[in-house]
Image (tube, rainbow, N blue to C red; front, side, top):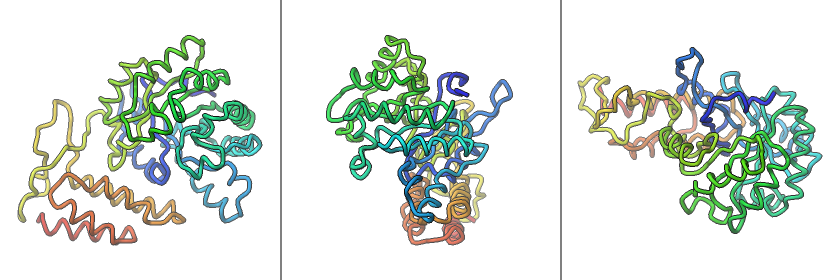
Length: 360
């Protein structure tokens, strides 16, 4: 059942990001990153993660609260392999949640030991677990008991207030996880400093020295698919996890499609819409995603969000608009207009009206 050992390398995965990588966005990524490989299989991200889900909530929440948490565990077959990320400092709750995840048909379980959010840390979870290695061990063991054969992985950082990789990583590896994702910063550093990928390289060395079979993935400041490949080659890691670069870019994992750095001035009225091109010619074999496709996918994403995640506040979608709507003339105007809308139909209407002002 350990799908990790069957994946071709390098492995590129979708990071768990709260109110970003929900089921709607993952489905959009799966659709627009899909491409046919030479062997006839369909390519895209190699593994998808859910947003992190509170195991404590799955055990103790009211029926209404639990229903909302269960909605965070919605997934589609096109997202496989799909990993559910959980957090708790209570082994019993982890075991219960892992059992639930297994029953829901997930391919793996990931434990969040890296989130720097204060409210999460107050529960002894996320990055706070770096300070309690004995508890971390118990949580991994509990996930394995509940998962009954599902591969268990861990996402963490190189340390809390300072770099503790030499001491912290062996603790995790001794529990034989299927994979460890290393966010190459300390908790104290948050995302305020460049990710130190040389520490991912050291993590690979520690893994090899201990004779562990765990996959090591690096995370932090991955800007493009080419950048991910370069970082993996530089460090010897088994793969990379991509986070912020996915915002507004469901084509990230597609080998021949790219978002343009910026667009030329929009054509005047009467010019065919197909002339919405980028200012620089793409490299051979690469196709830039034209503006109208970006806007069409934004609308599709919004309708999907509304359909499958009706319990979520519509404001969640607006952070995506900031990412989709940028780097072209008139972007600020359109972005401001979309921020005032509260339904998918309103978004579609606003975009249609905006296009009419610029394009025939």
